[in-house]
Image 1: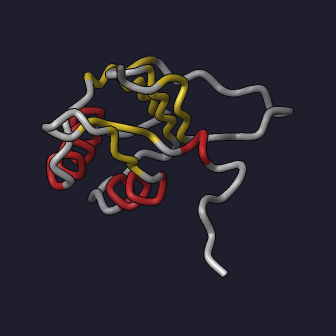
Image 2 (image 1 turned 45 degrees about the vertical axis):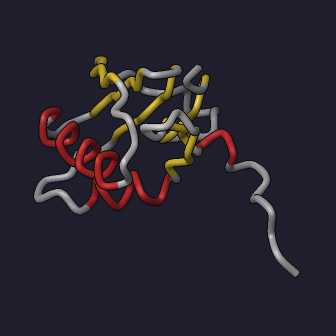
Image 3 (image 1 turned 135 degrees about the horizontal axis):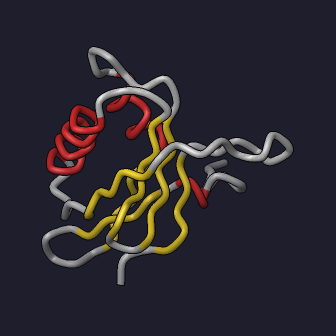
Length: 108
C-alpha cells in the first residue's frame, strides 16, 4: 500500500516555481528544519503564502536571519524566491487550531 497524500496537511504545503515555471512543493518539515537549525530560532513564527508572496510573523527573533535561512533553503531547492514580508505578531484566537504554516493561495 502507498500513500498519495496526507489529508489535512495539504494546506500547510507551500508551492514555489522552478526556473522552468513548474510548481514544486515546499513541505512544512523543510521549513521548520531550516528555521530551527538557526543559532537563535524565533520563539514562535507563522508563515502564510499568498501567491508569490510569503507573510511571516515572528513573536521574537531576528527577521533577517529567518529570511536568510528560508532563502538558503529555497535556493538550495532551485526554486524561485518569493517576496518575503514581515508583519507584526498577532496572537491567534485560542479556540482556533494553531497553524504555523499555511498556503492561502498559490503562485500563478
